[in-house]
Image (cartoon, rainbow, N blue to C red; front, side, top):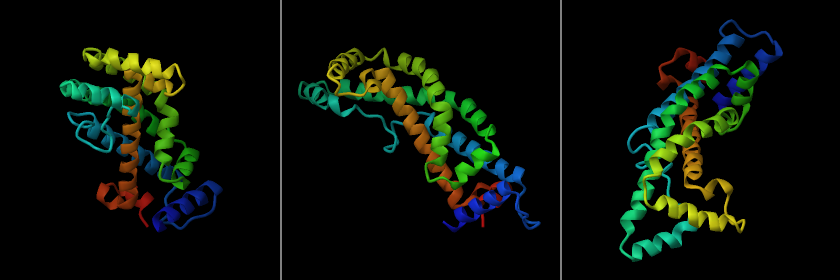
Length: 224
């Protein structure tokens, strides 16, 4: 908390044009530190998730069937077809793992475009400030980028059509979010949820122990 208050005060002073001691960061260095933290967090999250078992083997982001399909899944298991449910869940997670690496260049570009005003909001914000920043700038275009990759990865699974049929019926009664009524859209949304969650975790690591990053700039921005 002290580190965060210190950084917020420093950035606030810079923005207000208050004279700072000689050891203090310049306005440009402070903003550069935020950009570096964003870029570092984004790359680490993509590398963590965009590999085999990045989603499937991580309980924090593993994509499971939505609740409305639980009865359908139970029926398949009772009839000796549990392997089909497992096949679908595996395909959904593999689809997310295949799509996430495509986000790296867009996230890095968003990080590099941070303004001083953006940096102030991020530093002064809560624990989701980085996630909110990336989500507001990249979620929609990344959804468009992910969707065809997810579609290719899931369309060969037998239960995909059954998922869409059941989801479509439930959605017609207004009992399901539109994004969940189609397996491709559902997996795309969950992949992005997982990506932003892990970016947030990487940010918290940097804030908690900037020395461990090995970056002098990050140490000066997020250290005492």
